[in-house]
Length: 137
Image (cartoon, rainbow, N blue to C red; front, side):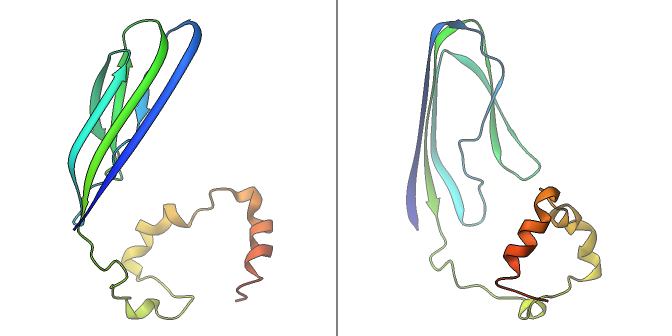
């Protein structure tokens, strides 16, 4: 097991008082079979109401609402994580993925649709030109 300490510190200083809107802070890694959060500290100035929730991917999100005007915003987070993966490159590759390109099984196709849609469709031609340096179908 390895212990990892993650520290995040953000400070904003404003010339005149400002009213802060709601903030979403992603300050903790996603827990899993090999990652466990052992300790977590979150200090906020000015005082804010913190509500923790998880998004659809299982990430912890701190929703922070502030009461009134302030001249500063400070967020300090310290998380201690236990990482249990001793040999991260010891994994098994599915036989269908040993050669590229490969076809996913029919029952997985629907789940993969969001990941197969282009994020930046206007860059498709430039990306295709770049890829052909390394791979030509």
